[in-house]
Amino acid sequence: MPFLLMDAITCCFRSVPSYAMLGIPKHEEAPPTPQHPLSAMGDACSRMDLTAIHQILLMTHYKDDEGTNELSFQEWNQQMKDMLEAQKRGDLAFRDKDLRSAMDCHSQIMSFKFVSIS
Image (cartoon, rainbow, N blue to C red):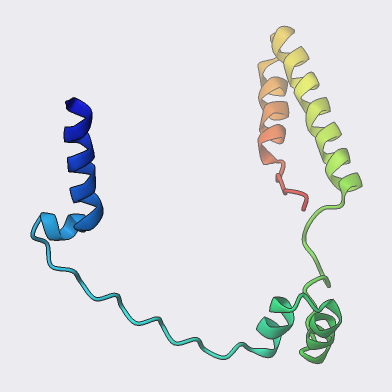
């Protein structure tokens, strides 16, 4: 008998939308937003046309790669070596109770600029 009751309830839910059973008025769906025409760059990107993208960048004199402020890996690696060396000197000075040298070394560590490598 319980299965018959479940079949009847399931049948009701299939034939009547839940918003109607709850007395909620159905809202009309919003009209789709109008599509704006793509720019030349947008069109080239949507087609994944690297040649067209390259041509657009050349025509617009795109020069993002010039004068970059990022460190090269070698410069970053040397900076990390210098920082670790300063830390070692500071730790040794602290162990030897040379507090002025320890503070100078650890201040030097804090002055290093950390730049991410892309």
